[in-house]
Image 1: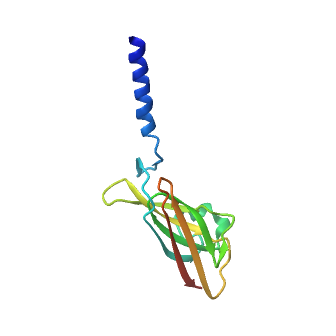
Image 2: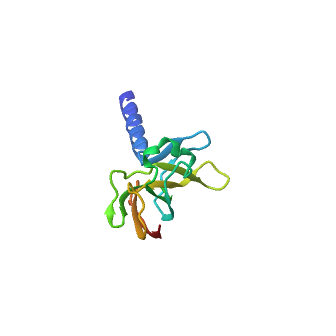
Image 3: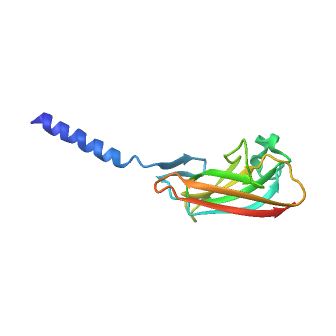
Length: 154
């Protein structure tokens, strides 16, 4: 009888733990701590294009090899990964991850709702019209895909 109760307990715990195996967005920063189910990417907005230098962001001192490149700030609400990044129709390579990531918090909270991210286009600016395109895929089911396109002139 004890074996049956023990087996039932073990199976119940396994079942409960299996329900908690959803993808989680978790992290720790001096001012931000989160641990919750990662939300779907609900919007992607390109806010501006810049020529990267040490004044682009205080953290740029760690990326001096990107100075002089075209950089694009992207605002993402939700949790996802960039799956396509194009500058003037060409896939951006070698970077598919942002060089700077700044959390966006819910008002009056330490819970992250999205991110402002700086992408290095890995090219020096040229005069004329340029286009930056990006698509994100959510990290959780149903893996929503959202994107944005931004045109600008240097």
